Image (cartoon, rainbow, N blue to C red; front, side):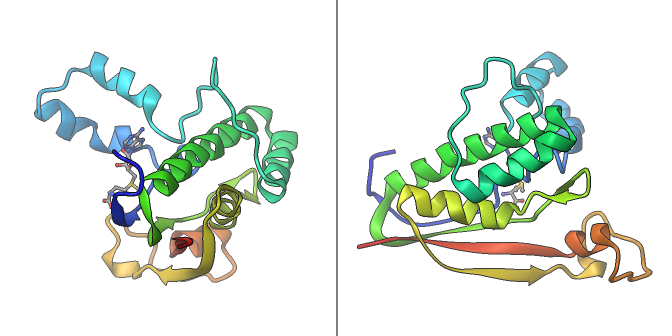
Length: 181
Ligand SMILES: C[S@@+](CC[C@H](N)C(=O)[O-])C[C@H]1O[C@@H](n2cnc3c(N)ncnc32)[C@H](O)[C@@H]1O
């Protein structure tokens, strides 16, 4: 796409480090649509948030994001690297959003956070920090509560507000990125 041509971006990118296995969820529909399993395993490798880091070109990360990647790497080096891959991919995606947006326009990005070895990936805070490093302003990050009864994959009926897993499954974050005029 040509630079400075887009009026608004609204998107929900993949969550960090295979929090949801999209290919597994979509596999049967894709085979029904005519894809073969070989094609799908190639496509899986290109999915944002995958775990393979062989020959992957990592991006440098801003301080807060780098600290989270470091903390997770200390607990689990393999998944720490995969998280670095995810934030590198999202850095390139946010750069591209910045490039194609017209000045004085916004990108709205919906994400949820994940946990790796009980450490929160703080995806919304990290993406906001990465966006600011690129040149976006981040006027706000909203919280969207997810209705327990309207989820595609419903959670249990007993609400346990102390449970990290239940808490994070019931909220998403809506990040507002603004490309200054
Ligand atoms: C959080 S889901 C959002 C899906 C859809 N926008 C929606 O709201 O229902 C993220 C989507 O990004 C797709 N995805 C992952 N890696 C991608 C890539 N490299 N290029 C394009 N889409 C990708 C996943 O398959 C998944 O469908």
